[in-house]
Image (cartoon, rainbow, N blue to C red; front, side, top):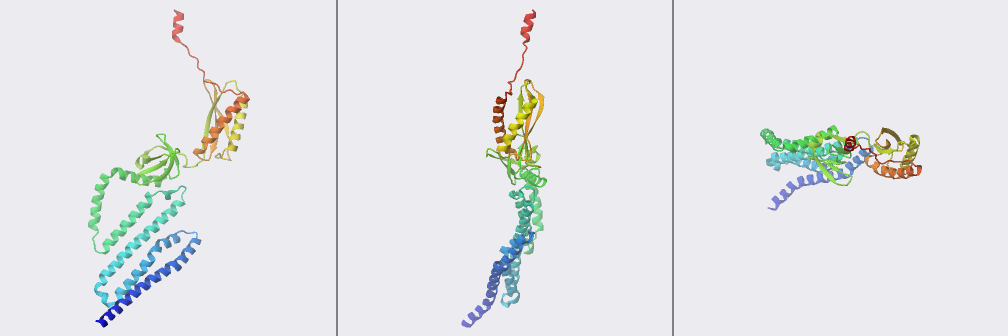
Length: 351
């Protein structure tokens, strides 16, 4: 019994030492060689090597352990009765780990690509989740096919079931594909300040599977279904240029000296933009007379601010200072005047 036990220990001891050695070597490789390669990759301008090394980082020890098990299975006689099942387990585990590595690599590449775009697409989860789901489903089907499970009936069932699900979840799928359309067409993007046709305004904070989240300047959040947003008429203040033309309408009396009014108004406007932040430093405020009103000559004062929200403090201070200056200069802002004729009185005088 003692001899048999000793033989059994030696019989199992060598394979166990090989597995332990492979795992230990994997740990050393991950800590030193892989770490050194990551430092070298960070010095290059390309991001693909960084992403590849990051994707395989968690799999190094597992892959070396699987290689050791595969080697033992092929070279050890007493494991021959179990070799077929062991090899299947090894390859199945390899497929699963490779699937996760590919998923992480592709998601990292999407993040790098989106970071190069004009807007912050990485903050959106819909595209990343879709890619992850597709890769995992493909890996799952490959694993089933390898272990001998026929995936043809499963694909057929998925097709029929997918049709039934698509009919049952018509609205949800409509929002999902509308969300993809919004992302790919760049109709709106995360960070944009928009105004809906309903009059609501706010910054887009995220585009999810079903909804687009919009944060109002009052710090309230409202969600718009992607299908409705995709078909809506939207004013996007940040699509081309974030700078915004702010206009302040003003009316002055008919007896005013228009050249003097223009000079005073421009002086006040320049004084305001010189003290209030948010104005485009390369833009000089100007005025344009627009029409003869019922009781005033109307004009507009034009500012150019860095974004939509920067206009409010500038307009606020401009109106305050302009009124003080107009009173000082004797420039009159008239009340509306309207002359009414009462036809009843005229008819009675005729009689």
